[in-house]
Every structure is written in structure tokens, then in C-alpha cells.
Length: 378
Image (cartoon, rainbow, N blue to C red):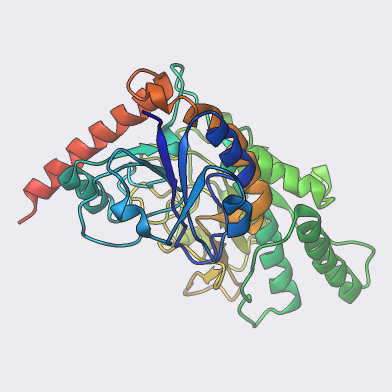
């Protein structure tokens, strides 16, 4: 029997990315897969681009709940909120394995329905290496760009909340806009150029490399970019040195409790340059959050949240959007689908191919923890 993939429409506001591009869908159909694609008004790719491919069936948005039980439901971001049991096998970013808010409730929906999650973040080879890492790099690129935009907004409009951001057609469009803001600051100050000083934590990882890459693309001098990784941060903290930079970009992979990188008490001073914190890791709701001065993610509609400080008159804004790559939806989707498809092509070996076996083992482990939590609740 042919493997059935069901590409669900993303429901998260401003999420224009997709797990599969039309080009990769065509490849899967030609390889013998059965493919159903839900209609979507917000996807960067139009319905017609999918519908024109012979062999693809179109379905109403959100109809995956009534898909054949053997179908794999393919998506990116979280499922719509519900208490209904989930019966299918889902391939997406569940964000439920690090004790995030609502993690147990989500996993128990799958337990009750007999479904399962193949979390993309935990699709690993036998060496434990993530096989679909592309969004990490894009998150670093886009997150740093938004951080610089936020810093520019503070300089140009110090008493005005930063307006919403929206997706760009391509990276060149994004770079042109950010550079124009930096030039406007320089013009107002009557100097040739102005750039923020940036420090990146997790700089050697994929996300961190993306952050540094964006800084270079914005022509920020190397002398104003500091790259820290595990050698500088492991088992240490808080770090007063962060206060000397304009922008702090956090790109670490959080998997356990660590000392805070910086505390609210440290921030409550006018003797600091730091005014923007970009948390690309976006573990705001995690009890292990190393940035304990904020606990709510931001959004495209409200890109920043102001940290309330008792003594300091200087602004401190946090940028923590949990889908940064959506700012470049076409490029992000294309890179992602190119990395994901080779593994989707092996779904006929879901019980033996290491990537799927490892993802299922992680789900089984976390689902058991969720069941235990639910039994302990009154």
C-alpha cells in the first residue's frame, strides 16, 4: 500500500511557511506516495501550484481530523487548541518535550487517541544529529534582523512601541529595509555610519551561525560582533559582560537547567548599553529559561515586550518570536522541504529507518511522562 501523506494547512497567525513545497510534493507523488494537500489562504505557495500537480488531491483546510487513519499528517507548527484525542501519526514541531506550557495536555491527547508524534526537532540519526536542521539557521538570520530593526526603532522612536513586522518576499528586501534604518540613524546623528554592538551566545551552532551571518550581511564590523559558545558559557553565569553590548542574541539549545545568563536585577541600571535581547531559542515558558526576566513570547503583531524595571530609565525590550523563519517563508520552506523530503521518502520503513525509530522512541518516552503527570493530578 502506498504511503499516504496529508499536508495540513498551518493555522498559526502569520505562519506562511509549509512543510512541503509543490516541487517536493511532485517528487513524492512520482515516487509512488499518495498525497493530500489542504487548501490554505496564508501559505506562501498558492493552492493552484499544488492542484496543478497530477496525483495530488486537495482537501478543505483543517480536514486532517477526518483523514484515513493510516495517513501521516505533515505540518510545521502546533495543532489548533483542542481537547480531542488525536488518532493519527503527526510529523511536526510539537514543542512539548521540554516541559513547555501545556506539554502534558498535548501529549495526552495523542495517548488517548492512539496517535503519535514524530517531532521534527528530534528526527536524529544514530549519532544523535538532527537531520532536518535548516530552520535553525533561518531562525538565526531572521531573529537577528528583527533584533537590529528593534534597536533601530529605539534609536529613531524612543517613546513609541515598535510596530508589527510582516513577511518579506525575499532576503534582499529584508536587508534593504534594515540597512535603510541604520542609515537613517547615521543621518540623524550626522555621522557616516552607525552599527550596534552584538553578542551572540551559541555562536557555533546552526542558529548562532545564522545570527552571525546576518550581522555580517548587514555590514556590521567584525570588531562589533562577539561570538560565545559552550566554552565561554558552560556552567557559568550570570554574565555582566552582556550589559556592555547593544544587542544580546541567545541561540543556545536548552535541554537542562543552567545558571541564568543575566538577571532582572542586573538589568535594572542605567549603567548599561544593552537595550535589546533577542531570544531565538524562545524557551520563555520553560522552567529552565536562562533569561528569567521575561516569560511570554512576542509575535509579528507585537515584536517586542518591554521589561519593567524599577530603577532604570533605559529601555530594555525582548524579541522572542517562536517562528522567526516565517519572515522569509519561501526561502525557509524551500530549504526545509529539501532537507525533509529524503526522510519522508523512507516512511515505508517507519518501523526500521533510524530517523523515524528515534523520533518515535522520544515520543514514547515523553508520552509516558505525560501519562504519569496526568495520573498525579487531582
